[in-house]
Image (cartoon, rainbow, N blue to C red; front, side, top):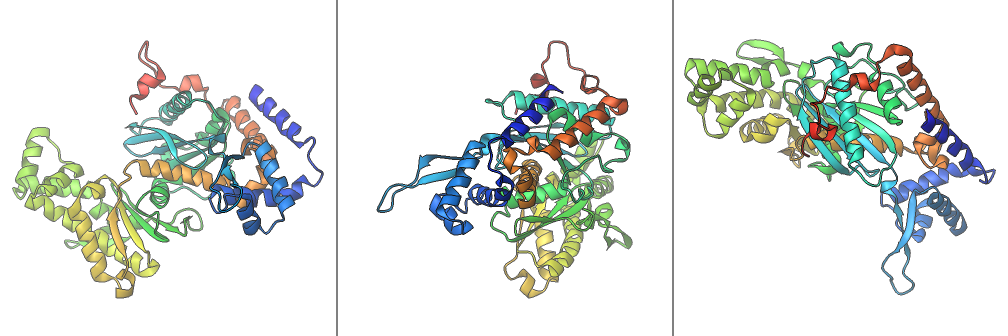
Length: 467
């Protein structure tokens, strides 16, 4: 609790010596910081034009932002007939952001700066059906490992977590104060409270398809696409929509559940993900192997005793006729649904994600053919359809982008900018106090009890494995 007391003392100290109208200056401070942070203004002259503030006001606000450690003016720009202007730079290194992606079989963690750029990341296998305590303990251990590897150490400003299912929208206040329903086996587990208490930073949760969509929009195929639709193909099939750089979440955060839409195949009617997802591909691959329609899959079954969707995809890529038909059939079913979305939403780009879609040209070709064939000509005139190239990093990039967007959302930014950091703001200090009270009350175990057992003489970093 010592760090909490220190933070409260520093927050109170920052208020001393400030002009009495400092709260009135918060909106202009926030506006200038976002102009600088997003690169829309890089000199004092550009800030004056973009903010419509006078020279004296801009100088005062930049002095305050510099004192708070949020901007830097030590670098000179190029001269254009006169004295070289000083460049105003956002201090991306003022804090760190912790991010993680939890999937059914994989766990990814990363540390980013305040621009959302990943500094270090790590991926490993995960069994999400394991007890929640083991998963959360491992996540905490990996987060500690990431922070230990970065010098100089900076405070954590926020934590972004990507979950495999839909995540309810946060309250209007912006901060997630408790754990929403996530996974059936996690009911009653104070996951969010634990992370807030342990790493002293606010937490944002999103679904995996939402973070992957944001990752593609920020650093992948969708960087220059004003309207992007991402479709994730796996055991579950979902979609994420990014419009003008912002994620569309729907009323409760449940948009994009296209895997539940009904489709027809071989006289059967069922949800898209049941008839075209990775489980369906693996199931059809086993049938093809046993019926002799796929020699390559028959060899795989004989050698391993099982068929996976990845096996079917690899066989299709090498020209196995039975596997090729399975992948084409799945692609056509997905394409029917995506064509409906394209006709309604008119995106400029559709990105297919998930290990199957990213590594199989046959499925991608079938989706393209179906979407182009079933959509209005105006919808497909400039429509691009491609596979993601970010892979498993997309969710981490997107989770960091979610936190950055939330931290610097103008309304939220104004609430903490005079403190220099969101974790020193009084409302977050109170939230952290409540989270620590919940965790100390016996509703969750201590972190030491939660950490997974390590091999004798093995450090957490060694457990985590190579980058």
